Image 1 (spheres, rainbow, N blue to C red):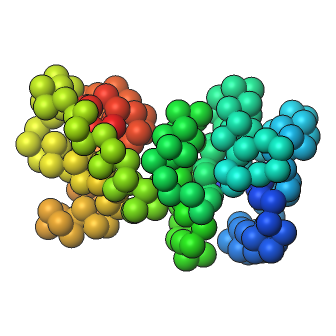
Image 2 (cartoon, rainbow, N blue to C red):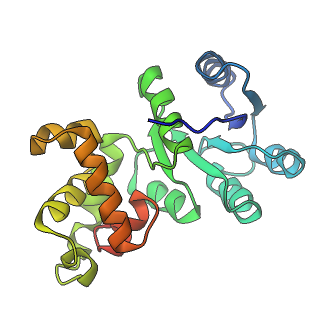
Length: 213
């Protein structure tokens, strides 16, 4: 699968040990990438105004300005910016505030390093990766609000409805393929068809439009 090249990325994290760790694993995974490091949101917002980064990783609890506040500012300034929350917070309030602010990805810090890199690649290629427990919390919190009469949901075939519900539960393509006894390529074909029918470009948009988020 074609991988979109990434040239620059910023990390906003107040724990110097975590910041050093992320800088190392990302630098090793993406040779030649320019990485900007910030320990607080205020400095990041000021300095990134003059830098054209493609992606930003945010912690939530930062000194002075929260990561979510920083996200609002940067996303308003650059709507195309790819934003990932990389945090210890897994409560519904922070999750939904971050998604509303414009985050397309929400990953917990205790995620294995290779999974963090995988999530960065997926986000860079237009995906919306989330830690599985975060996706389950999102689904659970909104379950009572799901509109079973949603016209967009019912415009999908039975197989597509089944597949998008697995997406809502946070399953990855490989896991969905195993569940449905089909190939990953078939899963991707279904996803493209779903996006086409719904006229959306991302998992989050598809879930919102079908009433699953």
